Image (cartoon, rainbow, N blue to C red):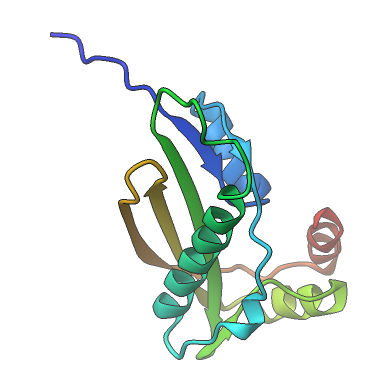
Length: 158
């Protein structure tokens, strides 16, 4: 028995090229909306609590913006909002996106020959029903020595 095709619209609440690429490579069409929040104002001691709180704050900000638009009007299919956040934990310190190239270079040099934990969360919200489901995962990443030329090229990409 063939499964029925599901009908839904996706709003990706992220400007992350990696997240956009994942959805595109899976063949999904989606709209991008970013949250206008002050991520630095949201603080939690545990990285998993932080990434979860940030994904929820992004979803709330986007949902508030959507109330002032007609994006959800006359939509025959459910609309799913996907928000996410990721941090790195290095030597017990939570690191978010670097603020500038110098900080990015410092972060990457620190990882060279060492290891760090990456903690990420995803929250999917059905904008029609209000139901949401999310979770977080952590992964340990071990690095070989990273040559300065590679560090320079990584910093220039972003």
